[in-house]
Length: 96
Image 1: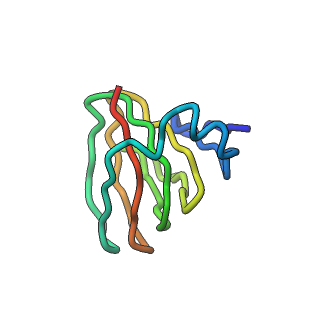
Image 2: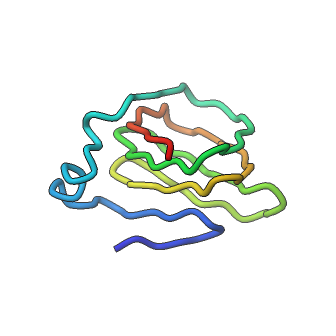
């Protein structure tokens, strides 16, 4: 079941049948080493974390959403945030 915090939806370890239905394994891949950087979503992004651990701080908030391997995540269009990557990321992603 997905939860939503600070506008970010996260589903922990969704069943493979859900991932197949979405076509996740055919989406492009992106990765990065441990780092910290700002990001703005010009479109809604859905991603599936294969590896990594990230704290996402939406602009204007002291709170964060932590995402990690096995999470299916949805970021809303227009969100600006800072990614704080503690474990190198490898993910599938799709912009809508």
